[in-house]
Image (cartoon, rainbow, N blue to C red; front, side, top):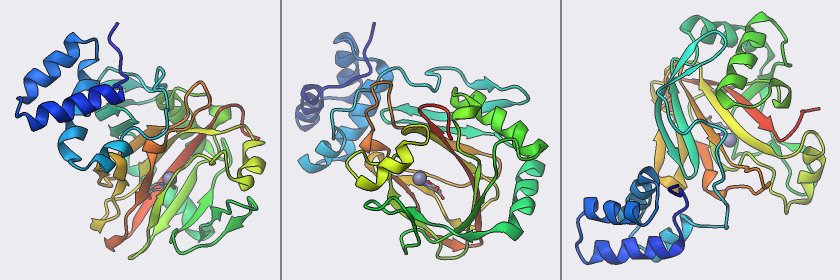
Length: 284
Ligand code: PD2
Ligand code: ZN
């Protein structure tokens, strides 16, 4: 069976062949012949073409993370959830990222925003040393949480989210709603709790590591506000009702530094999102 893991040797082989002027189709063909999955070969080629410096190449292979079988399905254009068909607009496998169309209706987006407006509070981050919540400039937004099944809409969405993320409802933290005004942003970060940070322990005790995220866009942003994945040069534009999924903790408990991501500043308009974080086990 073809492998999705492209070794450092393959990456350097791609570089050599690009420098020699080989055409892209023959590079991919040789990799597939060598047992690499065609999609993985294409992504590795794109990384080689967009990162001429050796340092960037190192970014693509940072930490020995093993891309074991993803939770998110590797194929299929539609994900049938308990109440809605969700369309896969694009997916990549290293890191695992997928953009989903029509995840929510306009009415559902509007209702979530209306239910949240009066409850918003300034967002915080986890202090890496103490584990306590802290307000910092890197995260300029306000937000609020719903508990699991807090109302019929949230219960329906929690189930839909679980169907798409292929992970139990009980493992999810409550849906978080975030609002960014002009200039609001969330600088590059990981959603997992860095195992080496002393402050992570208190959070890991509540259901283990975070394994995957779904960011759901609740409005169209006039300008800015993209969700970016700098390691893979990807920017996802907010579109009302769509969502971006990514996963970063495999069945071995390793975390994927390639999942680095951020929300870039809103330039015009405002941005509303809902976020779901899944844990390794039941969240408590
Ligand atoms: O606002 C976003 O697009 C965004 C991007 C990355 C939000 C988060 N992460 C998050 O809340 O973790
Ligand atoms: Zn995040």
